[in-house]
Amino acid sequence: MPSSVMPASKQGDGRQSSAAAVSATDLRKSYGDKVVLDGIDLRIPAGSVFALLGPNGAGKTTAVKILSTLIGADGGQARVAGHDVATSPNGVRAAIGVTGQFSAVDGLITGEENMLLMADLHHLSKREGRRVAAELLERFDLTDAAKKPASTYSGGMKRRLDIAMTLVGDPRIIFLDEPTTGLDPRSRHNMWGIIRELVSDGVTVFLTTQYLDEADELADRIAVLHDGRIAAEGTADELKRLVPGGHVRLRFTDPRAYERAAAALPDVTCDDETLSLQIPSDGSQRELRSILDRLDADDIEADELTVHTPDLDDVFFALTGGTDVPNQPEAVAR
Image (cartoon, rainbow, N blue to C red; front, side, top):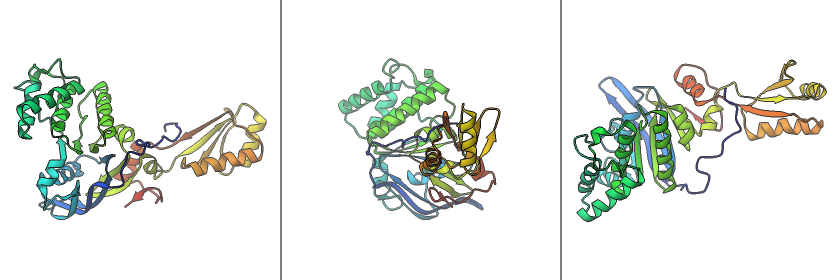
């Protein structure tokens, strides 16, 4: 298990709005006898990153296609940027950008020509299109490669160009369907930086991913999709608390302090060789304060305190692999 202090909110500077950029109620979709979405509910605040996790075939891409008006739902309602996806698809399309699993880049033309093509599709004037294309190519560090055929670009460069093309219409909501699949670690981290920049500009990002560290790193809220339903939803910390196994570890150099702490604290597991105590904990601030208050009351000082919490891999396997998950008030388990 990883050892860490609890991370602060990904967007703790007050930029998030309480308004819902994306919302869905009882969204359903089937293909023949195969139920893909079995009544999912979503509410994504503006200016935040929302990550939808799930195994292959869970319905992540189907959800993105419905919300971006590429396909229709069989039931339920959804609103994106204030527009109903069924009755006002043009309003939705005017407000969003979509980057799918597979690049929309045309490899036969240059990066600049790909950008200008998107500008034409958005009905920008030639002058405005060239200005926007030049600004985005510079922003995504593609200026030097702008005149080269896109087929010569690396995977990371194609992904950057793909997102740059998505931004030509200045969307306020962006759907990124597994945007870093197949990228090397450096390119993935570069993409994370791009996503953070987008959100800092007030853009809402709906992210689907199979990389759990990606969701942990970027998302304000995470939902796990399994068997067509949202199995659980919450912040990364809230979801981690759904899985048992978290604990606080105290280490001492003074054997007497170690023995006194073992006597003062409930449900401890002792390691006499390392003078360490392990106390079951969900890692919450309340539980940490309770442990420290007990130590302070007996004038006991630990030399080291670490919080060990399950990671999102543990959560994912627990929610999609049949492991029982106890109900927790902090996260919504469904």
